[in-house]
Image 1 (cartoon, rainbow, N blue to C red):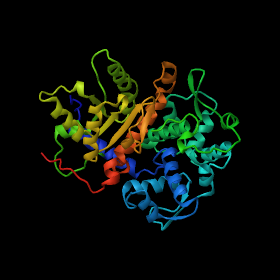
Image 2 (cartoon, one colour):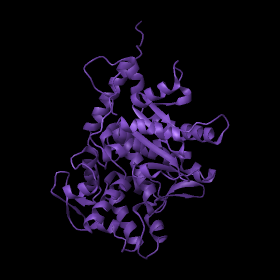
Image 3 (cartoon, rainbow, N blue to C red):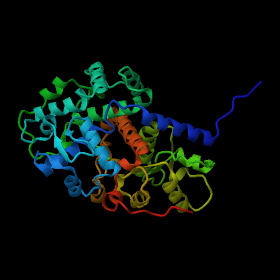
Image 4 (cartoon, rainbow, N blue to C red):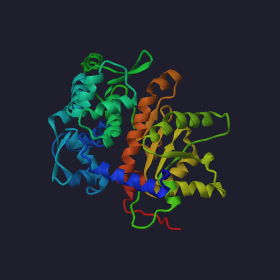
Length: 396
């Protein structure tokens, strides 16, 4: 009798690579980022041109970004898909749409501005609009139920998880996802708009929408044999976090984020999470940490407590220009040098604030991770922004 063969690490990696290629080929009927990120780019356009058309090259020179880079092209593409701007990444000029201006104009009544944002972020994205109509007025369903539901709306199966996570992130930013009676609920437009003042939104940032929680390497394909070590790191997310001593606040915090948010978010993506205290290889711990920083497919960095080791390790990953997702406790300030990098803020002020939003935080982490893995060049860090030609040598 033939025994069923267990796939080798190399076969598992190749299978993931093939799946990633298929995902890229599948048509995405929704933008490849959350609405908040696209709105931030539209606001740069709005501020630079005072609402008027601007030259694409001049705008990116002002932003100190390369107009032809992957991140710059993605900014334009996603803002375009959300209906915020006119003009593609090869256009001579970029221009805000009438609805895009409404979504940004601080002279408008707040109610009108939020209404325009809902139209762009949900109503005109067909799968999001249908999903919202199905669940509005109810508790946020389990993530698996959202994924199953969105498949009914012509979203390819391989993109359903990404669509569900982006949908939840958008609801949170808009204020359509609120904690009521101890549970996350998808509120109706009427409920939200009726709660907003009719006065203009003066001197507020785009992140001031109700209930906002901000969030900002694909497998390598080669012709040679993929080693077992390479397969191990290709399936690994290294979790950079303040660990602390047993029983300390930092250790309890790290264990909570790891077990309740990070690991569940990455489980669907086939990544195992390794924290420094779980490294079981013999050798010098510092050398091993650096090896994981340079070889792991993904790094998630928890900036809570402003731990110096975390920032040191994050700088190494940034210098290597490899995918990183950042998160932090909402009570901690994101340091100045990193406040332009998208960072997921998690409210840990008390159990009543944290528990109802666990699924939402998982969705935010999953959304950011998925984007970082599928298009590593779409995620900026201070080094890629200010020194785009900077490279480090990673050879042995």
